Length: 393
Image (tube, rainbow, N blue to C red):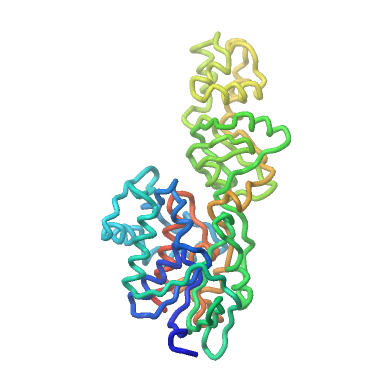
């Protein structure tokens, strides 16, 4: 084995977590090889945030992440916070702005974030191999071995940073899970998250509202999010739905409060103020016309409000504040922004991201069973978990 094929650490995956880990480890004096089968690094970064990269969220906290172990993310997130990444962005002169709900975006392009990470990797002397398929991965004599097309490389440390299977058109696969299982790590069932929901049966009629959006509160179990919901030709999408999809399981209903700012008896009050108005007219003053018409039709209260009983109007108000939908599925990994599930955190150190039973093996980013809310939380996990692993390499 030549010295050129021996490294201190091999990192599989040149996405957000992998590049962060490589840059920090390299700048700590480690000889790092960053490997990705894609022809350029950071492909998911480039398409994120509409091309402007929602690179973190200032409201990051452990309770905004889903995991079989809800406390696992606390250590890494506490040691590398949004302010730390913002300082890095500022140091590279990248202009940014806060959009809504603590979400930070580049003023320019997501490509600036990739260029920043590439510059940080260069500063750490990181070697990068792109466009090469990874062959077999093995371990023996204290070294991990990765077979590439033109050579075999070895190192005492291996970092799994290849993400999950969401957005397969970007080259995403379940490779991280196969590798984890090979080394005896368990995998929590992966499923699509931050993904549109589909409707069927009688609820398919709502698909006729494709393109209509409204500010709502979406609920599933104890989880609730107030943001926009969007009707699509397949079902429901928009930020509120993407958020709630991470909590939804097949067979569960979700409920939508179409009028979260209205008091419980608002329709009774509307009857007093406008007895000759029709229900759809009153709803159209608060909701898009097509949505108001569909909801009014489904409520089955024709005629003027003055001709309806208070009880009927109270019941209509209750339905509008907790309208039940029964999704028949999601649009799958093809449209999922991230993956829930992944490499079981029970087998990893929350401080270093190292596998407890396989010294030198690490897992970071989306490959791990830690999934954030929509709005920059998953990037912050990538930065934090990558940084945490790099401190231990």
